[in-house]
Length: 203
Image (cartoon, rainbow, N blue to C red; front, side, top):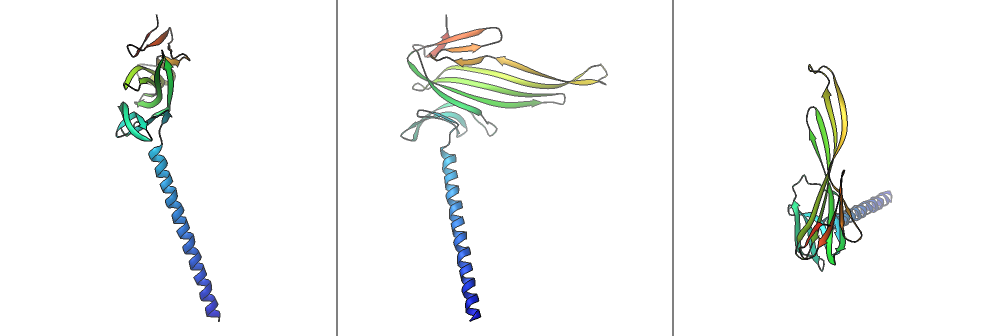
């Protein structure tokens, strides 16, 4: 009788362990499928039927139609080291034309024995999607520099200096679709010329 009870107890334990293993396996497979699906469909930014993504070695604006890729605007080639951050895609209207402003940031570092420079570059490009034309672009760079400077000719004494350097213009998109480039000494205003399909300096 004891043998029958022990055998039944062991059989129930085995069945329970198998059931838990099967359930865990199905859950993991389901999670893997969900992750793969989200990875395949995820974009860096979206607006209307446009998706910003890295695809086939390119940083691009993918033009979708009915959920499928119809065409693409290549922004720039992208290698394995290309890691854009703060990607944003904004739809705007300028002089009656529908345009899209794409912005992103790239961070790089230049390092030597005496100097380390962390460079943050902010990119802004505007496209007219129907013609796949870039109608404006702007680049602004902020550099954080840490440098070891010798105080004498024999290089026996030194000090570490830190400074910030800014190059280029900060770009501001105005509510009416015009642009303002803000610099240290001057601001430049731009308006969209729908005939030329490009931004021109406002007179």
